[in-house]
Length: 254
Image (cartoon, rainbow, N blue to C red; front, side, top):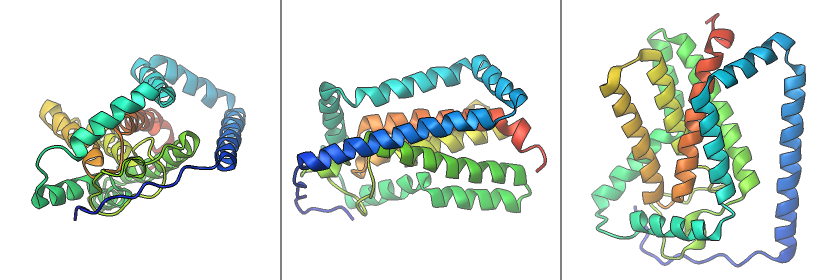
């Protein structure tokens, strides 16, 4: 499944292409800010006040939002990209990579796939956890939307597009690199399921160990840099906390 052939670097973008890319990101950012402002204006006064109260009371989520913002800003730091590259190549190229391990890592990385979340939601629906089913589906769809918007804004290339020696396990992922959607999905599910079932320290450790494994596999299969994975983990955790905050207000009827 691993590709042994030498990857070909893409030609550099022209000045016009880079200018258009920057304008596109600026337009998208302005549209996003305007949309958020309209959303908050549309909310009833009581709901708006309750949301801000919940945000002030939830220090960990605010802290993670700050961390995510700092990680995003750090993408502009050239030395950070150099460190990102060294860590990525350490996990992606160096060491022994037998075919059975490549296959195992490819299978493990699918745990962060949207299809896996839909299958999990279907299982919970069958066993009568319909409220959790709705939370998983809505959370997955909105998280995917957030990831795609952030990817369009940051416009970071995949590692295999920058490094000719990068190994790609499976197929070449489309789209941009930051943040890792698979990792975000895995941490979102770990947070949500932990909140629902309170499985104890052993169960929680297992859920987050699985999420960390998904993050690691994203570097192993050649799809993401380390900061993409860290950003995805933080964003997915924030999304899980948001789901627990809105749970009493939006899903009480299910």
